[in-house]
Length: 136
Length: 126
Image (tube, rainbow over all chains, first blue to last red; front, side):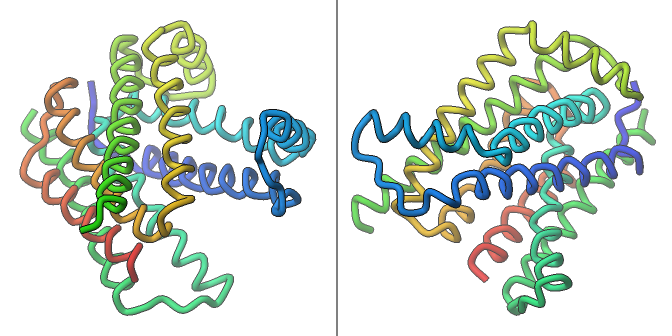
């Protein structure tokens, strides 16, 4: 079975990262109206759940979790877990860069250093699959 | 170090272990089916087969547990701090992949793992 990281799998990994970010965004949006909600009893808890369930964002988030699971398991059928998780850490680079380009947020020197480390780590992890393919 | 901080770090380690176990369980289930997904049909079929495997459900339960612990952690600690401690879950995954899934984690992959952990700590604290 071929185990090396192809461009197609890389795109799938990036896509599942984007979906995961979308999930978090939807979860946040689904409870944003309840910012002053105080949960002190079980009935408060039920009321909170009820209003969250009424939000279309919650259902979008759940759908997105399902889709992420399908894509993630498909990826896992093609490559090692220890590579997949490393390449998926791309999102730590992705999110600050999106914030820089679209939200004009500043990226600190320390954070640029971190991005560089993650990038090197992802490249090393990807190369480690190639090495194995050549050996076999 | 104050005892509260140690408790919070302990909880973050627990969520890291939970996340790593969920990933190991999912990969274990996928491996047991021995397929090679290359299209939507196969992906859908893989999903149907997976939800009939108890290990996958155990993984879901563990991730719900981990979510609750994580929410508690976030109510006590900074997200920056929590994220940087949580980055150690990459080490757990690498170790568990080697032990339980018999994946060949060589020097390059270990170095990649360490670089990413350091990188995430820098990004979280930066």
